[in-house]
Amino acid sequence: MADKRITEDDVVAELRDGMTIGIGGWGSRRKPMSLVRAIARSPLRDLTIVSYGGPDVGILCAVGKARKVIYGFVSLDSIPLEPHFRKAREAGSVDAMELDEGMFQWGLRAAAYRLPFLPTRAGLGSDVMRINPALRTVRSPYADGEELVAMPALELDAALVHMNRADARGNGQYLGPDPYFDDLFCMAAKRRFLSCERIVPTEKLREEGPIQSLLIDRMMVDGVVEAPMGAHFTECPTDYGRDEAFQKEYAATAKDPAAWAKFKERYLDAPSHAAYVEAVKSR
Amino acid sequence: MSTDATRDEICVVACAEAFRGDGEIMASPMLPVPALGARLAKKTFAPDLVLTDGVAAMQEWGVVEGWMPYRKVFDVVWWGRRHVFMGASQLDRFGNQNLSCIGDWRKPSSQLLGVRGAPGNTICHTTSYWVPKHGKDVFVESVDLVSGVGYDRAAALGPLAGRFHEIRVVVTNLAVLDFDTPDHRMRLRSVHPGVPVDEVLAATSFELVVPPSVPETRRPSTAELELIRAGLK
Image (cartoon, rainbow over all chains, first blue to last red; front, side, top):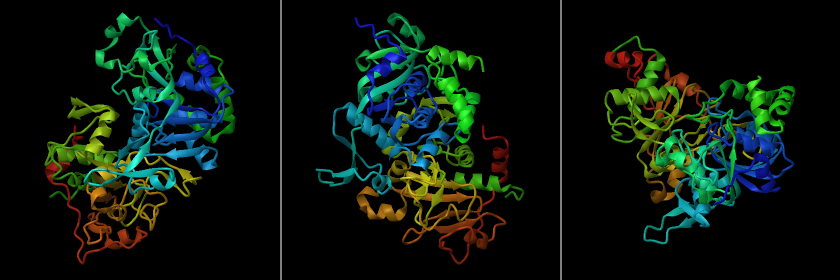
């Protein structure tokens, strides 16, 4: 039986310049931040980031790793607009594919099902069609003849997700109220990496939560990273809430280059997740 | 009829009225005033409305009655049993809404939220808007990016694709607007007590359809005011 336990740096070693990388979670909620920081301090470049965006997108824009972002929104939740993402967009330093949130899900689902596209009404009549000139419509072959958006598959080279618990083989469990679309991200990707708060023996998973909380199964996962506080500063219920004070500090650095340099050196350049956690604890 | 209602309380009632007759569907108010409006509607004339806690629970007066994570919200949107109350950074005369960015999308002068769920919401189910500060910067001749689809755009799609489209009302701090006109241009439905019609017109960049006599937005009843002031828990 495969033991898939690896480290953040092992994950980065599997990634290549120019890859399309999907990141699970939602806004500033249950983001695989230890993996995001490992990418941020790596030599990787020209990545396309696919995300229900939060600080994962902001950080990867701010450190120049993202060449393109595919998103429906980018938000820190308690701070509605992600300041580092805004800065990158307003500077024109990243390419963008902006989609309706439902279209985005449909694109992941099409990729998961190995379909070229899935039809939807969402997007019709809106400027999503204008700002994404590659989008096409498709006509129903049945009597209704309705014209629909043909949402193309959002195929991912790699997916990164964060769970509360997992076993060493990649069965992953979320304990908060919302699974988001982490299973779809994994199914849409060629290489799939799961970080988690704690790795437990398989037989202990059911003690942690009900069977329905076992969202990710080992068929969906290539590597498992144990990263306690791995979603910090985003929330990871029921293990911890969002670190609002830290998030405020992060957001404020978008307007202050000196503060950003300090933030980056202290937290993003920390050589390991353990070193980051130490830096956070000693604030 | 109460006479001592604040403007905010009048707006809450106007938002509540938007949900009248909706029955057993999900009300998704995105901002505080419409959220109070939805709760007031549910407390009074729309008891079957489904509300969420804003996280992942269907919640009725503190009691969890169901699970509503984002994946289920998306199902409900496309299913159509939903009435969303969104904000708007810009709105035009046909109700095209922008919450994505200001300026050229390729390199915006101000990146806002992104289109979020607005394209799908507006084409799949009933939508209303809440504008806390009615001004020419919001009510514009032409929006910089169409996030939420307006009536002209929906009509251009034809009767099939546009059949679930409905923008019911736009509630602002000054007035209630709707699209109850032959070509679905925005109309001044009512002005809030104490607001002259001219003040609304002066705060709108495009020409509103103004009926010969513009009624006042209704004031909260004493019972409604009591509910609002008790916190609508």
